[in-house]
Length: 490
Image 1 (cartoon, rainbow, N blue to C red):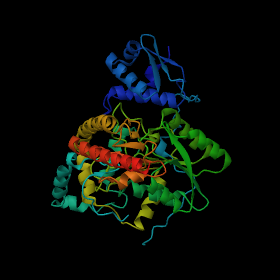
Image 2 (cartoon, one colour):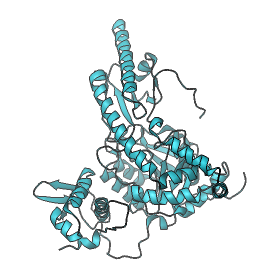
Image 3 (cartoon, rainbow, N blue to C red):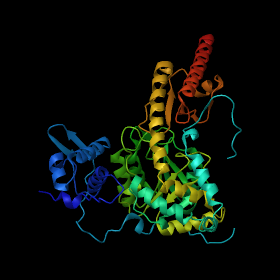
């Protein structure tokens, strides 16, 4: 019998639930090629006995893997590794020469920055505003965060520590993030692999300035986060757009591009792609990692929306897999707590983080040490985890409420695919209606729309049921105006 007890590692002292440890171990075995596509796995009773755990724990692990398409469960028959997983070469057991991903240096070319000195927002619109997917600040533990902040400003040791290492991020916040990202995202990192920034956009900018130049090529999805595209273009690099479909960015198209020219980087939003909200499939995640190794390009993984997934636990980041360090991971607390809380983070090999810190010093000597340490305390006390659990439940309810409203009220005018997570729905207008016409004929302020796609993002998380109803009603009135105008022209 296959020695599953040596492949599936369970640490009783770990904060990660046992069922997730089992699921992560099996996922890693599939990624490493130990379990090939179609391989039959033991039944829940048999595996539970082998591992010395309750059968319900194994059932929960299998349900998690099935929801994420890693395995196929045939009721009352067998469980097998999904046939859609690419065939990978197995690795030797006990290979102590394998480093954790971020123990490697980034060996691909990037700019070295010497350590030396040296969007305007529109006014708040009146009436109804449909944003592109913001958290509801009314649910956030901002009061608790500010209470800790005020407390820190009155203590001598806190005053002293608040000014230490803010260019890279305070040691307290970086250490708490090491633990938090390990538990929630499976990242195996140290504090030296972290840079605290003023949000995801700063992380994108710093990465772009070091990785790209006038002779560089970077692949992005189409449509994509426009601000990221602009940042890449300003480096002088050539931005190559690849279609995004219901399974995410087209990795086959990326492979063909790599065969024709040198690709230096790929920018990807794996969870709830911006703006379309689709999630990158397991097959394409694995294909993208394999392409990165084969063609030596860096992956910039923008995981701004990781924490809100409603049908199952979110897929683990690409960064949690085997990528030899050629991967930059970007996240933000703005989507967790408040858009105005400009604290984000970047995870990368230590040598790359050191150079990002040096570049950051040329424009910004560091962040707010008090706020960073207050956020660290919020994470340590478990308040952030409790908030995310509460917010995810509320946002899930609002997504489903909006889904019902849209179908009942706007079904004749629009089409959309309900996202599995995130805080917005990508809505396409039916033939005969234009998004520019809708904007001109409604009193609703829509902050993110695309004329070419004839679509807009409906951010639902920041609105309660009453506000959602009012917004949809106003949109219906706009569509009726468009309909009447069309009839008059006829």
